[in-house]
Length: 322
Image 1 (cartoon, rainbow, N blue to C red):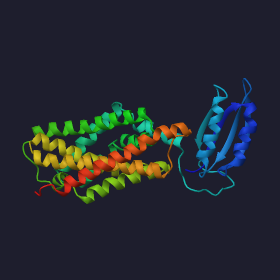
Image 2: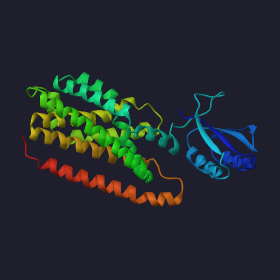
Image 3: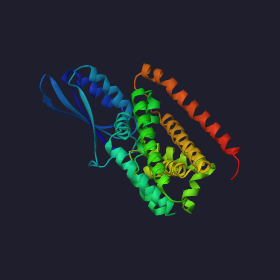
Image 4: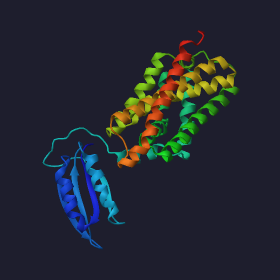
C-alpha cells in the first residue's frame, strides 16, 4: 500500500521544522498537529504517499537527536477520503530494514519450517510429484535470509550480513543433513525425473535463480505479498539442497556434485540479482559517511558474486557430459 501515516513525537519547538518538511516534499498529502504531551512534546501527523517519502523521513530523522523521547512511527493507511492520486507502492529503507530483520532471524520456527519443507520436498522429488514439491515451497523460509544478506550488503550493515549468512547457511545445512540421512537409509535410487533434473545445471537454472532474486527484491520494495516470490526462491534453492543431500546419502557422488553445482549457482544468482536491484532502487544508508563506508561492501559484493558466477559458468560449460 502506498499511503502511510507518519506519527511523530517531537518537542513543540520543532513544529516549524516539521511544517517546513511537510510543505517541501510532494509526498505529504496533509499535515496535522495532534495533542500536546508531557514535557513540552506533541504529536504531529503527516499523511504521505510514495514519491519522495524516503527523503521526507530522512529529513524528519534529524528531529530524533533533539530529544530522547522523539520518535517516528510509520503506519499503514488503507485509504483516505477524498481519494488522492497514488504513485507506486515503494517501502522506505526503515520499513525494509524491519522486514529484513525478521527474515534473517534464526529461531526454532525457521529450523522447524526448513525441516518440514525439506521432508515434503524430498517426498515430492522421489515420487516425481511436482505438486508436492511446490507445496513444500510454500512453507520453505529460505527467501528471508538470502535477500536480507543482499540488503545488508547494500547498507554496509555487517551485523545483518552476518546474521543472515548464519541463518541461510544453517537452513541449507539442515536441509542437506536431513536429506543425506534419508538417502542413507533409503534402499535404492528412485526412478524420478524431478529428482534427476536437479542433478543437472544449465542456463535455464541460472535464469530461474536470477529472476527469483529480482522478483523477490521488486516485490519486497513495492510492499507486495512475498508468498509467491518466496515460492520462486524456494524452488531455486531447496530442491537442489535436498537432492544434494539425498545423493550423498546414496553414495552417488557424481550426481551429488551436479546438485551441489546447481545449488551454488542458484545461491550466487539470487544474491547477485538481489544486490543489483537494491542498488538500482537507490537503497543506501541515510548519512553521507555511512554511504561512504557502505561503498566497499556494495562494490565488493557485486565483484565477488560476479566472479563466482563467471567461474561457475566456466565449470558448467566444460563439465563432462553424462
